[in-house]
Length: 268
Image (cartoon, rainbow, N blue to C red; front, side, top):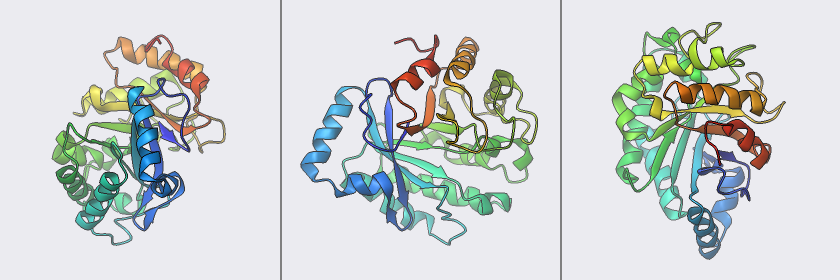
């Protein structure tokens, strides 16, 4: 779902996410979108929305560390929510990857995220705007149980979050590369962080989107061929899951990729 441009394969995805909106302002495709005229934005949005596709912006990403950098969560949320409103977008995805803050395990990252999320939702009402998060899967692991990581975020602000685009990649060799490791028993570096294990920890399956990168070289670890991923998705579907798939990134995650990854679980 994270898009590096305007995806012509609309209709196969339900969401196109423009990266990135940083603390310092829009960059990459978020900046390109902001530079368009109001009429051009409206025309593109109309085409996407008519096909059932929402267009949102991704906040932060791997290069931005808002908590460690001292950004105020309320002020940052107000600024980013205003960007959504000013640029005719359907919402925002919080791709928070401030590893220094979360790895400190002192509760600071969790408190920052809860405050940030609550403020976003005040300006972007539920039912009118999408508000999603894209945490890495280990942040649901019991390894972080001293302060809870994303389990704490979910407990305190989960009712405000539409769903989680969980990043099941870049977390160590052999993590999340088989159906068992992805769905039922993560093991390895991050026990308790497979899809069903996260659900058992209290996060509804309906809010857990499976995130993968689409092409070899698109990430450091966790790659799965889309056809193999499609088999896992089908297994998850049989186990009661149906939240969907997130892909990093277009154009690697093109129509052929998503057709394969959807497999028999989400037939076209």
